[in-house]
Image 1 (spheres, rainbow, N blue to C red):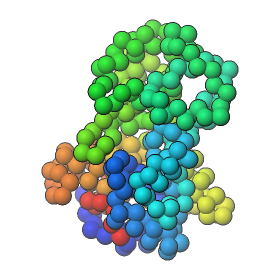
Image 2: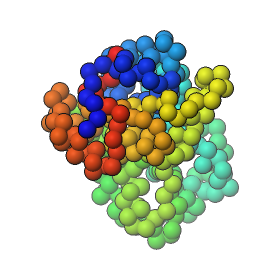
Image 3: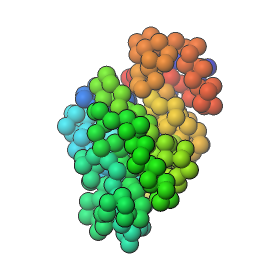
Image 4: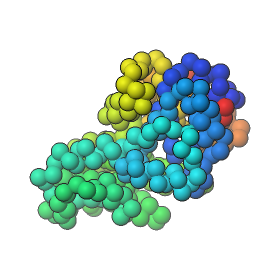
Length: 286
């Protein structure tokens, strides 16, 4: 069982760089977590570098606008690395092909300034999935026929957000990862652009090194902070970096609630995921 800590400051001394999840750690989609923002600001004030690493299916610059709206201070981070950034790189390499965008209009910034040729599903060469068209009412089951049609044509899917669900206030809504996983079960080929897969961590590492003036960053001096076993902890483990688990996020109800997590249940979740974070805490707090 990892240590359950109340304050981040003692652990922070062991690291130079944080790869910090956004939704569920820094904000809940409606409001910023002030303690978390203050902790990140304090870490940076001590010489640390904070890279916000998010499975948001839009470019980092678009994520920044959302953070501004939620009043996340610029003092809390050095840069943003998103799965949308990784997705844009994939799309840019396939401009000769027609693409079908499976997702809401708000994610269209993935394609901004790229000479993309869009097409209906029936004639597209591949699919970029950024989410459900309407995640307020739809579920993955709503897409059963569409996914079957895609599989019949052996269409390649780029998943711009590997998260299965995300918090929106007190509710959980489905994300692109839920559709991508359902497509993979059908035998469809999927490329996942975000956590827990390596491309987003490689981009975050390059971004951290740039933020630190080009200095090399040792992986044993990087700590990933997140609230998802499936994405944050497994991704960190696969990339060879330590992790800090935030219990007040998407898994909270699985181990007794946000305020009083059951440590035995928490350990069971870690065992099931075959991950052991360096520590766990309710919410990021200096």
